[in-house]
Length: 208
Image 1 (cartoon, rainbow, N blue to C red):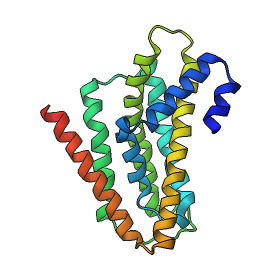
Image 2: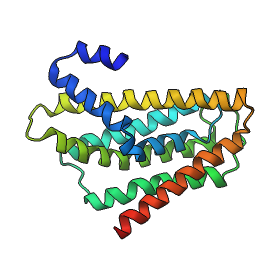
Image 3: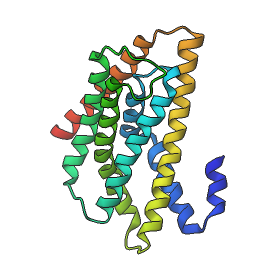
Image 4: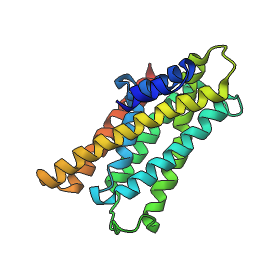
């Protein structure tokens, strides 16, 4: 709904790139980014929604920075490196969630023990931005108004990412508050799925 409203608020070029960004993050074929966002959030309880917002913001800052720098050709990495680094970020995040014993207050958004997760989100966001940039460059072609296109594309990405997090929080609330799923089981389930799928992606990329 809000994407439809925004689509009609701006000119055709801005709206087209906004939709491209939205489609890229929502597209099930690009599930690596969806998987990373869910794995990032899996460690936290519903009461820790503030921490989820901060950690997603850290990821946003990271991937927005390298999306811009890579598109402007200031930061360049071989495509095959980026393809394998992205699932590696998912695998490492998932395994950290599984082995970690988290005993922190839900009220303190910046617990020392959780700051590490923010740094991880920011750092790994830099890598994911390179993946977004490869797609963005292909879609941009020879167009010249790169700043507006970057802003529109990144806005679409963020709208999609916010939608994913909201749906994740709804499912988390229902699972833990209605069906009484233990949060540790929730964390292990999503992190285990993230680890397994990302490992398969790494093997597929390395041996294809």
